[in-house]
Image 1 (cartoon, rainbow, N blue to C red):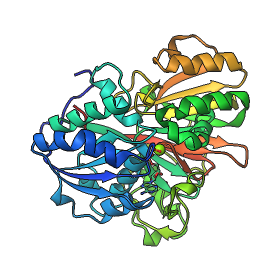
Image 2 (cartoon, rainbow, N blue to C red):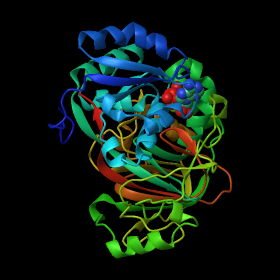
Image 3 (spheres, rainbow, N blue to C red):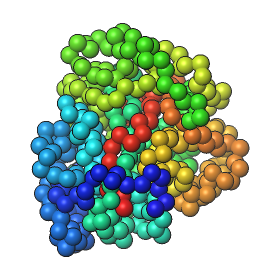
Image 4 (cartoon, rainbow, N blue to C red):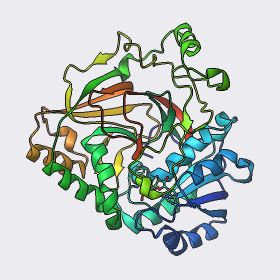
Length: 408
Ligand code: ADP
Ligand code: MG
């Protein structure tokens, strides 16, 4: 195996799956794709499954938050990355999150953005595949059932919302393409290429401040400082027994259909308790970053993306060195001043994952464990795992091996 670390020896081959299907994902054919390509494979591998078709946005999240997880050995999504994002956050909202997030996850690419599925396929050293071939490959992985660890990144937003991410945090060009390209979802994975070409014609600059903790510098802050912060943080923390020092009082979104794709999926309507390990590397957003962090001197960007998997889409290898459990956020940013042609070359090279070797002076790549981004413009788009979140200052830190995934 190419991936670092390897499999979790204590997990037996998962044989009872909860399969969640988003019928709206991709071109709207996820259910048929599952029936045609995956169903028989699972049956032959002696895997039993409960099929649940999601009825609205956040349905999967609510389901896994309430479910009796002992019925299943794995939770599998047949959709794009958005549905797994719901599952991960639903698991982290449970009182028993520490155990729940250990439930092996599985991905079947049924969406238009299937970055994690493409990444897992790539980590195995297999030749690149897309569409239904990638689906079949991922189906085989589920049958083999080798479970690996998966890093999660905890993301804190200005209103103290807190969420968990397995894929990416993006601002600028990439975030805009992600959202604008929703309208091309009928073309499937090609939507990102189309979105990129359209966005290139209206290329713009995004102003803000970026800071990060380089991977080689990352000792945790003294625990006293983080526990003190948790006492001073938040206005109704008495009702929220969060173990996170910086991200209390986050709230559950409740938007309900795919027409809401451009609105943040997290709104301040229903309070829920988000748990999770303490963010030992972060200080509250209203305090300056710790002095051993690096503050980027440029404040004009074309894009900032923090990725923790190799792929951002089936044919975009944003961080070729990334692995499931490397404990690293691969931070890539492009400074203002890059020409349209150079940016186009960059995205074309990203299809092969060679964009970081081009010596383009506007492109910076650093491995970090935590970062903070403070956009200056009052309006804009930030995405987490391809989903729009509340716009404003945001910070994140990686938590190595927090989750598990069937990946071999
Ligand atoms: P895609 O890659 O095609 O975008 P995703 O899995 O990312 O597929 O899903 C897109 C969005 O649809 C996500 O925000 C997800 O939460 C939401 N969603 C999930 N189930 C449903 C449903 N039944 N109807 C509408 N939206 C849904
Ligand atoms: Mg999506």
